[in-house]
Length: 257
Image 1 (cartoon, rainbow, N blue to C red):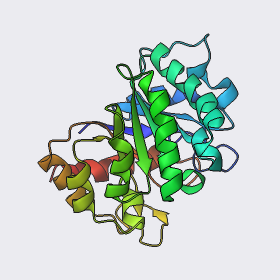
Image 2 (tube, rainbow, N blue to C red):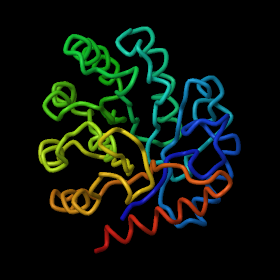
Image 3 (tube, one colour):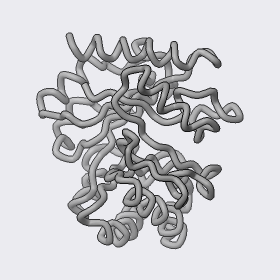
Image 4 (cartoon, rainbow, N blue to C red):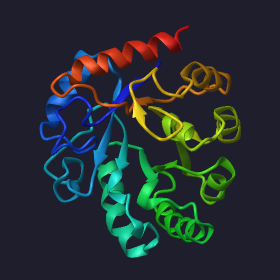
């Protein structure tokens, strides 16, 4: 099992945020190694965008086990504005190339939702224009709160469009995991492990409505062997390592059943 974690989950929360670029980001790689986790999904937020280490020249992260860059700075209602999208995503693309990362996770949820048909069509056109420039070097992996058929409308536009399967989001949206995986199996290249209830609360893994035993079985059946990235509920502040080790043990136990 290629198990890793979202950046920031191994550190104290920043300013009370569940997901924000960590203050002591270098230390997370040491904790990652101690935790026997395989990779980290790098995080770019609106707050960290101007000075995020993966985007500035003086840092080289080529030898770090980074599976993807999560462009959280794109969670914005301006997602269909070409100037906004290009100015906020192009530097991430260039940072990915500079640092040997081949996948960018694009969150299409909350403010950046493209559930609306016209908005989805507009976004597809704009992101396709940008993605074409990186056709042979980067994949754009969409984490979308969209039913599979609507997500396919985007995926079919470019060969370097893929899917980040967020297990918790699929649960809370009321989608059937079996249908989701069977419809999108050839596109899934990243899996976010998160437990949610049907009323969209992120909870301790194993206490919500997300059936991880079923999910792992479905993914094994379609031959998925890509990264699993823990994006789980935070536990007690100051106990990040203990929380993650508990979640790691739970997921590995279910996966290996």
